[in-house]
Image 1 (tube, rainbow, N blue to C red):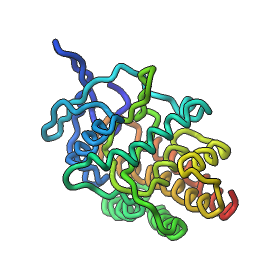
Image 2: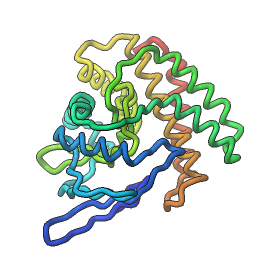
Image 3: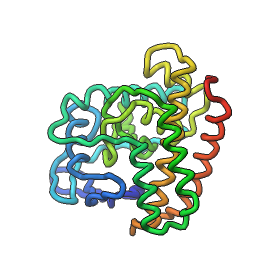
Image 4: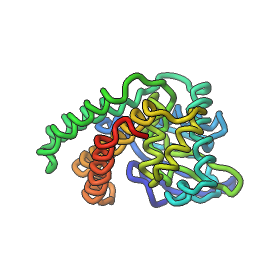
Length: 273
């Protein structure tokens, strides 16, 4: 199956049905730990949000195959679809932790940014001259964010991780799941799927069930920048560490440009929703 840039994925069938087999070991440099992914996948299924885990062992997870299609960014941004996606994400935040068992991870994007900075220096990244600037920007964004609420975040809300079976939506791929601010998932949902300003306002008001104010907008905007910065540095590290067939260099350049545009807008419009 195509689309994975952290795992290899296969559709397998037998006499009983169809399954998705995910093959991938821990990736410590990205803070991906498969015990955590497995626990969250089971919790998501128990909450009615993700597919069932049929079998698991080291580096292999077998999931029930859901006859469906992945959404596209344009579909997610559509006025009729965005509320459905947002409600699914909020259900995951609220309900999946009730079913989570055992140790679990915290996904704190600002720690990841600092850690990626160290990794990129150690690996003598071709982006070496940018590292200090990017880490300093992450630290400033953390200060702008201020206090947070804590939920179980998906932390990778790409369109390809949302399925539509024609009746309902499903959430898949919990590689990066961990406790986090809900603003990270909302910022990732917006930046990964090209939401415009009006859609972002509507998203925030629907999620928090309150009118948007300048303080929330500023904190959300800081986290959206952090989401893009983390994706950029994730790809920079992957350029040097991944052996999957994917053009990480192009992905780094694309995300760096998106991050810079969002950060310039954040600096220019702080405090203005």
